[in-house]
Length: 113
Image (cartoon, rainbow, N blue to C red):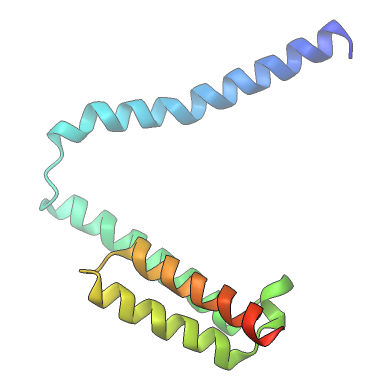
């Protein structure tokens, strides 16, 4: 690699790092002033939950790639297990999505799809 290519790659890495970490640091700074019960924060949480629900619905109804090999009943079972975990885990999206994904992976491995 020439010096110009190396400099360009280094610049790209630095710019990408700054573009991502700038928002993280601003979030850390602003987090002390955010009221989790404020209408804006509740709306943001609802939008994030709706986006996750939309993605899950798309993956179940119209899967692509390797997910398309899993039968519909297995995808629906994984969603059901994920919803139960979400409800049982005090509405934790991470727990619901993680449990549903683990159920799907285990089902595919167990049944050999």
